[in-house]
Structure formats: structure tokens, C-alpha cells
Length: 550
Image (cartoon, rainbow, N blue to C red; front, side, top):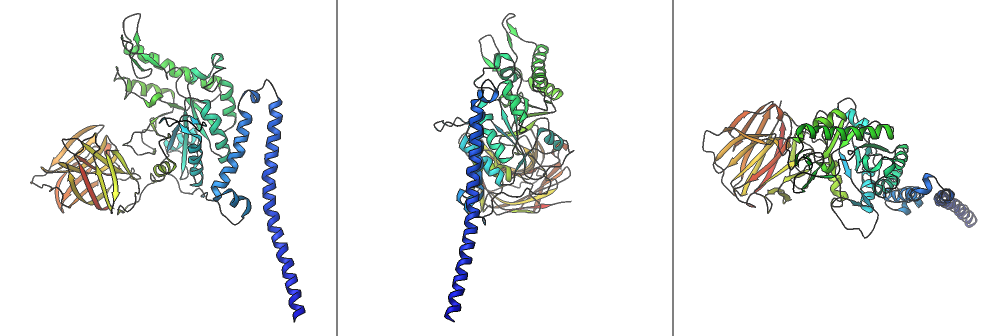
């Protein structure tokens, strides 16, 4: 028996060694493969740097190759939890999620400016550090997001093309070197693509061949040839400030009237319209004739499409109409009181973009894009965690199963709305409300942005139904009875919307009803507080339940 046992142990030991060596060999193959790839890349880079008088020796091309390899390795470590897991442990699964087969109902568009490599750079609220940008891109990739092109986006917004869930469009403004050269290796490693909106007057032509800040025409050609980038318009010379009065005040090129020194006056409306049309057409011609691309998109400089004009409020309609007659898509920055995503059938020629700067963390970005996914009815919220509540203005917090919305130190009101409810149509919302401070609060329905929604308004004076359409507020009906609220007391409130009919209830009793504007045909829910004094309104909400209606 002892001889058989010894023989068994010997055989088992040999098998164990063989298995160990097989596993070890596979791990070593991975390590050697990484080293081999690095050696090939480095030797290629060495050969390229010997070349002279060509694109590669004049640009950061060789640095981009090294950045690509580093990014590839870094993402492998991020995706598998650590680099050692990726190299040594074949059993660990990547974090990357499979792209879902479901069709998306909305598309987020991200806006970036510069991606700064300097580790000593200070947050400026506009640009973003390379570290933060890389982390955000890694997070989007592992969450299952895939990037799309302008053509795909246009087809989706027109309702002519279906796209999978977690589709996203990434864009950059200004045609800057410090965004392209730093971001491109990351996009290459992740199989992402993006749109660069170019100020053509600063990039295209002989005069710009030595630009140190903006991409040159040669660089834009190479950027587009990669297949990872598209080019759009950010005007030709419309990103400049211009003189808008006799005192030398500076204003925006596209939205203010120019001061004509020779005539001692502002330009006429006709002169204004012709000037901006000339610039828009010139930028389109630059892109199509010099870069050989179809100019599908335009991004408004400074995010200003007329709302910030200093001397010509009428510029908004003229500018938007001119832009839309030249470019199929136009892009602006989203306001705080808006849903982050873009939906087919909306104003797809004034596309919202989420401005992503150093102020926004990876988790904040994921919260915004993830929680815009449509919520289904019936919907219940216990406020144990934030399932998509956003601030229109003022402040809010979730605490002990309650939603608290309140005015900020500089405001007399607050509005909080639920992301992912943009497409809701017919429903009734039930909640328990307690007015802590102030003289009124509202249950909000059919909310699409801070200028368009309906509400049941509850105050110490009674109950009324109102609507806000394109920023103009109208009272539709008021309670015939004195149904007053009592501060610091829980009150059961309800509002129902079916078609264009809305009804307000308090403590189970109908209080007001009326017919809404056709503009408010869909939209989500929210809560609002206000008072006559600053920083003196707050509201607690609990027991929220929203049920579908036919």
C-alpha cells in the first residue's frame, strides 16, 4: 500500500507541477505580449522621429502613440480592478457592461473645452484635467456607453434612426490642440469618437499654419483622417468680442449689433443679419472646401444664441433662423432647469449639451446621464436615495425618507424636478407635503424646463391651477372655497393630468381644474416653493406615488 501511495503522490505532484507551469506559462505569455507590443511601438516611434519635414516630426504624433499604449494598459487595469488582475488572473471578469439591445429614448451630448496635462493646473471652471477626463471616459466605457456620429444623431433626432441605449455624443469647442492631442489616444484606446467644433478663422488658411493654440489645417486633416473625429462650425470669426457702443463696450459678435465708428451709430438690423450670415456661410465653406467634410453641426460661441445680447434682444430669432437655414444641427449649453438629454421631436435644432468641466466629478456625470433614462409608471419614491432629482433653482436634499426643497441664500423660491420623466403624459401625482417656511408651494406636472410646466399652487390664501408657457405664467382657475394650507402640518395633495385637462386636489377634495396649453402635452414632475422674502421658503415631501391614467 505504501508503494502505491508513494506512486500516487508522485503522479499527483507531477500533474500539479504541469498544471502550475501551464498556468504560469499563460500568465508569462500575457506579460511578454505586453512587453513585445511596447517594444514594437517604441521602435516604430524611434523610426518616425528620424524622419524630417513631415507631419509626424512636426507634431506630437509620437507622443500620442505612447499615450495610446499607456491608456490601453491603464484601462485594462481599470476595467479588471487592477493591472495585476488583468495580467495574472484569467478568472477575473472585466467591469465593462454589454451594450444593451434596447432602443434609447434620449441622447446626452457632452461638451468639453481643453484637457489639461499640467499637474499644477488650477481649476478654472471651464477646462478639465487629463486625469479627470480619462477617469470619466473610462467610467462611461465600463458603464456600457458607446459614442455616435453627427449623422447618427441627426437621424435619431428626426425619428428616422434607432440607436441603442447608452448612446452618447461627445463634443469639443474651439478646435484646440490641448483637447485633440490629449483626448485622441484615449478615444483610440476605448473605440470612442467625438466632434470638434472649429473656429475656422483661427485654424484654416496660411495665416494659421504656425498657431500654437488652435489646430492648423494640416492637423485638422489628420484628425479627420483618423476616423475618430468629425468637424463642425464654431463660426469663422464670430468667437471674438466686438465694440457695441461709442464707449467701447465689448459684446458678442453673433448676438449684439456692431458699433460703426465711421458713422457713429449701431449697425442696422439688415446690416447685422447680413454680417452674421456672411460669417456662418464662410465657416461652412471653410469646412467643406478646405477639409472636405459635410458641415452638419454648429455650436454657438459662449453658448449664447441671443439670450445674452446686450443691445439687440431681437438677435435671437434672426440668429437661430440663419443658423438653422445653413446647418442641420445647432448646439447650445443646457441650463440648470432642463432635462440633460435630447429627445426626438423636441427642438432638435437647438441641441442641449452638458458642459463638463473640472467642477463635475465622474460620479456627478454618471448620475446625470444614467438617471435620465425613462422612469416607468407607476412610480414610487421613498427618498431613501436620489433616483434622479435635480435642482431647477434653489437647493434640495434627501434626509430621513423626506425630500426637502428650499430657496437658496440669494433666492426667494426653489424648484426641484425628477430626471427621467420628460416623456410622461397622462398621470396623477399623490404626495404628502409640509410647508416649513414661506407662504406657498406647488406640485408641478408636465415639466419640460423652468419656463414650461403646469402646477397646483397651495398657499395660505387657497388653491389654484396655473401654467407657465415660454416663461409667461397664467392662473387658469382658483378654488371657489377657502381651502387653505396650514404651515408645518402634513397635507395630502394630488394633481392629475389627462390630455390637456388638469385637476388639483387637497385632502381628497377637488379644489381647481382647467385646460392646459397644447405646448404642455408631456413632461415630468417636481415641487416648488416661494415667498416674498429671500431665503425664506422650504418644503418637505413624503409618500410620493405617481400612477398612470388613460
